[in-house]
Image 1 (tube, rainbow, N blue to C red):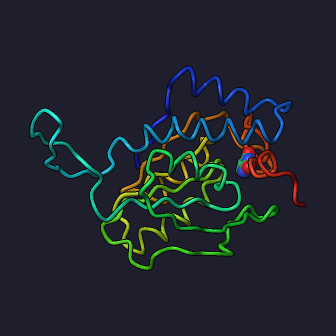
Image 2 (tube, rainbow, N blue to C red; image 1 turned 180 degrees about the vertical axis):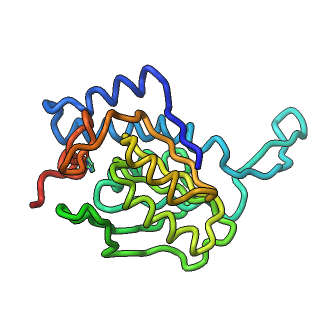
Length: 211
Ligand code: URA
């Protein structure tokens, strides 16, 4: 597994405002969207392309276009939805699948409550988006499912990661074709499974509290 921390002043600036508890939901959603677009630029560095012959108004030349099958973008509901637009802004022809996953507050174990994805992902590049890589349980479960369906290149785009979650992913997905792109790796996880210093509950910050 490869991990790429995007080191850029605009990323750090937007992340700091996301972390700030005074940032309201509307601003949080807008900034998360902008931040994802910056991360998506790095995350798509190895998106597959093919050569194409074209004519400019001046002459014939060759260029590239995204190859088939198109990449698949998979937001993990609920908070991953807030990252979908930022991702497909750079990949407007991508297909989109959905995975609904919830983490048990006591055990911190992830379970899937909804899944809408192609059965056959053979040869597909997949971008899975989820704001927080905390314990790693959700992403490991999601990525195993994508690889089981045939995906041969999976990039997880997360706003923030905890070292504990990175370690779990490295262990559980050793040797798998997986890259993690994040804006920062924070200090640690606290006893409730929250990233420290983190930004709180990403879903609640985006959409308001549900429980
Ligand atoms: N999920 C969140 O939304 N925040 C955390 O800090 C950890 C998991």
